[in-house]
Length: 456
Picture 1 (cartoon, rainbow, N blue to C red):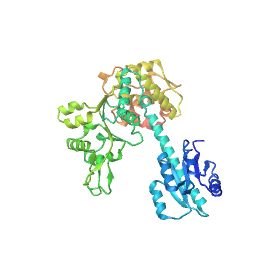
Picture 2: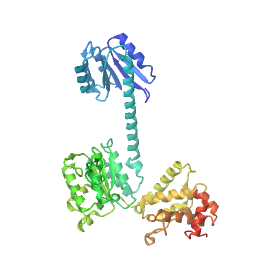
Picture 3: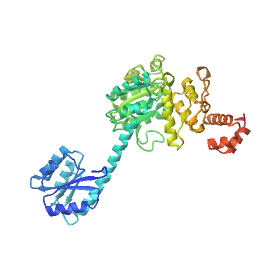
Picture 4: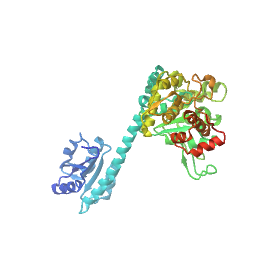
C-alpha cells in the first residue's frame, strides 16, 4: 500500500449493501477497501490496522456499541462510522460519546453521505500525516549530532550530556558565550525527549521590555492594563506538555525572579489581572552567558531561584577551544550556503584554513557562519583564498590572527567594511566591485564621496 492509500474496512453482513458501499468508495483509486461479514472477522484482521472502519450496528455476532468498544480498545485512533437501519438519537449520542466518528442511518442517500464523511476523515488524516512528517523532519534537523557539528573532546562530552538530559525531565541550565549555540542545544534536548510532539517555546528575556515580560511569560486578562484589549495566553501555557526555554535568564529583574520562583514551585501560573490559577506541565531550560553564581554573590540574582534553575548544568565550549571543529563547521556552512544560493561549490584554500585556525572567534559559531558566507560571495573560481576572509577584531589584543569582521558594529559599519575590502581586492575597479556584491555602482560612488571608503 502506498503512503497516499487509505485503508477502509466495511463490516456489513448484507452482501448487497456491502457491495454498494464498496462500489461507491472505490471510485477513488486511493481507497483500498476490504469487506467483512462479521465483527469477529474484522477484529481478527486488525494486525494490519485500517484508517477507517464502517460498522453495521446490527451484526450477527455483536451489537454496534460492544463492537465499537472492542475496536477502540485495539485501535484508539481509528475512525469508525456506524451505519444503522434505525434512527435512534439516544443510540447515536451514546456511540458518539464512545468515540464513533459519525452515525449514519441506512437509506437511499447513505452511500453519498458516507462518501463525503470519508472525504472529511481523509483530509484530517492527510493533515495528521503531514504534521507527523514535519515533526519527524524537525526532530532530525535538531538531532544533536546533525545540528551541532563537532568532533573535539569537549563536544563529545556535550553530546553525552544532551543524551542524558533528553532521557529525563530535569531542568537544564546552559551556560556559554554569545554565539556558541545555546538555543540549538536546548532544541536538541527537547526534540530528543518524549516531549518532542509538543511545543518548544523560546523566550529571549533580554529582548522584551521589563514592563511587558510578566505578561509575556504568564499571560494577561482583557483589561488588565492599558492596551490589554483581549486575553493573552502566556508562554508557560503555550509550552504545556512541551518545553519552555528562557534565554538570557540573568536579565530578569528581582521582582520577576520572585514570581518565577513561585510559579516553578507551585507548577501553576496566574495571568496578569486574573484571579484563577492555571496548572501547567512544561519542562524548563534556561541559558545565560553570565556566571549566575557570581550574580547571586553580587545580589543581582536570587539564591533560591538559582538552585531551582541549576538542574543539570551544561557549559558550552567557545569555538577557540574546539580545535579543528572550526574547519568542520566552516565546510558545513559553506556547503549549505552555496546550495541555498545556487552558487558553485566552494572550498577553503590551505591559507584560508590556517587563517581560520589561528583566529580566536570572539563571536564564536555565529561569527564563523557570517564570515564563511561572506567569503563564499567574495570568492572566485570556487576557492576561498585567505584574502576572502576579512578578519578585523573589535578586540585586537585578543585576536591571534590580527582582526575580524566587526560582529558588534552596526549593519552600516559592516557594509562599509565589505565594500572597502572589495575595493582593495579589485584595485579600485568600481564596476567589478558592484557586480561582485550585486549593488549599484552609484552606491559605491556615494560612499566614496562621503568618505566612508577610499580607493586603494
